[in-house]
Image (tube, rainbow, N blue to C red; front, side, top):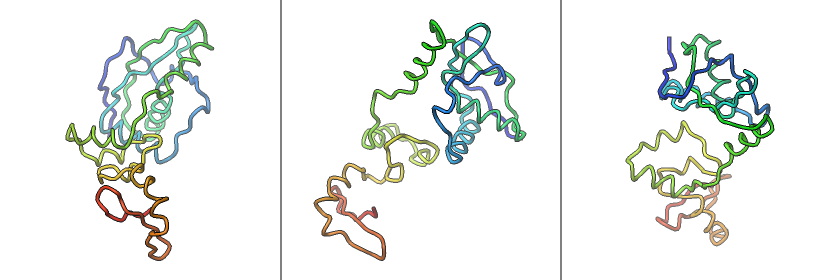
Length: 184
């Protein structure tokens, strides 16, 4: 039987059934991303504490909604799931402020670029295959590790539009960096 291991610490511990959803249908989890998250939990363990807002003994999840849902489903499917998980309490004046903090938590102020992500992987000699397990908004993971970026391709699409090579219903554009033709 596969099991999820705890790979972090928190100020306190909380059981899955003690957690109350705070986000509702704010975000969805596709089946593909459900499987990626499940596989990540099995491979890396529970690596980040839940962020929880506590009001009158109700523990609201600020960060960890998707993990909570996936872990509950895994438990139903017979995976070995810990009874308690590390958590960190986040202070808020009331439930309204807690929801505002949930929005802050889901905001992304720094932008991940394909070049930046590619350089990160190269600099630290990380395996590009791990990208299959991840999802970054606006990043074409299929190009990662190829040396090509969406920016490179988009910059030349308009210029090369008349030079596109057609093979059946496929269209190609030439990468300005290396001259390789890439299907678009």
